[in-house]
Amino acid sequence: MVFFTVMGYLFVASVSLLCLFCVDKWVRRWLYSSSELILGPSALPVIGCAYHFFGDPSNVLRAIIRTIDSYQDIVKLWLGYRLLYVLKKPEYIEKVITNPNALNKDFFYEPLVSVLGDGLVTLGGAKWRRHRKLINPSFNQKILDNFVELFNERANHLVKILEETVGERNVPLYDIIGACVVDLSCQTAMGVNMSIGNVEKRVGEVLEKLNELSTERSLKLWNHIEVIWLLSGKKAQFNYYIKRLRSIVNEVIQKKMQDEDLKELRRDESVIANDGYDSKRRAFLDILLTQTDLNEKEIRDEVNTFLVAATRTTTNTLTAIFTVLGIYQDVQRKVYQEIVDVVGVEGEIRPEHLQRLEYTERVIKETLRVFPAVGMFSRYVAEDIDLGNNVKIEKGASAAVPVVYMHRCDKFWTDAMKFNPDRFLPGTSSRHPYTYLPFSQGPRNCIGGRYVTMLMKVVVALAIRPLKVFSEYKSIEEISLKLGILVRMTDGPKVWFQRRVS
Image (cartoon, rainbow, N blue to C red; front, side, top):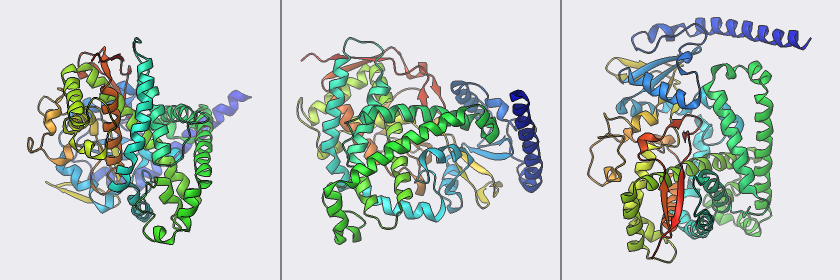
């Protein structure tokens, strides 16, 4: 009986998919004719060229890079009945992601909406502009400078944990840094100390599972069919972890609502009139909760977005930074010497120190080039966009920016797979600015780019001063990457630590 029920579901799903395909092909027939002049891999009925990208996440990333490398400045991909143009020319990328008709995210982000809700990453149109305007004051430089004290406090806690691993090989760096970054985010962005109750570990576990399941749905075309997603059992798992994430976010918000400082802040009309900003250290959540323009769901979704997006990307990048410092001991020595010269062998990092850690910042930038947290992002095109040279992206298509490819392409970077922080010395390059996109570019660039960079400088400085890091890898070329919602090292960082000898 169960067998026939399952077969019935599959039959209905297959017929529905076929009908959808036929109707959509008729409705979107202009896309098929207008895209004929742009080359791309061969496409099959129903699935398009998705069959080129089957396999595990590591193989998928390699297949994508290999495929788009075979074509010119723009590549046509049919993914099922959806048309996606992959842009390899920085001038094309600039024209698309700065165009007001390409500000909305596309179908690849559908699984993320379930995780993040309707926040800055997933929103489009007027709602996105309204949220961006309301949240911008949270990342004012004065507010960020006030966070440096907390960055020091939590980074010192991280260093103590790393010191306990001395003597161990293959330190679980991603998990250790992830817990620290969640803790830091709760205290700086949320203004809440959540160290009690192991919130940082709970969040880490939940986000890891949601990343895994979201990746599986995004990369496997058949998982976009609701019936198949349901029958696989993955939907139930996904919903379970969504429920846990929402419970944690509600816990953070409820704890913040009991904060006496917040109650006073909400009564202060002068602060509310100034978009929630005053001279004191105010968290991202403080400002959200003082905004009468945001309802409870909107606040929760923005907290979701920050907690997921900021913590995972920062964790990925810090893990990559320690890995490259472990590989390139000469780079690590220069970072250490700069820290000692600027800050001293003891003492906390202050905001004025961060501006002078120029080589350390170049190391961070070069790490973000080689190991961007986001491998690819895409936009829905609401109206035709003329790219010049008789190239046009039609209304109803999507445009993708292959960040990993752009960052590792010898056409844009001399010896692209050589780790060289001095690429980012002032005045050393005339490359197009849209060849480097770790925080995207244009009006939808990452709002938290400065926050993340400052945090990473503090963590790296305080960790490298007492500790040396080593890696089993001999070069960055040995490190395989896997594509997901974020890009990760397939086999982990393979690092260990030793105490420095005075």
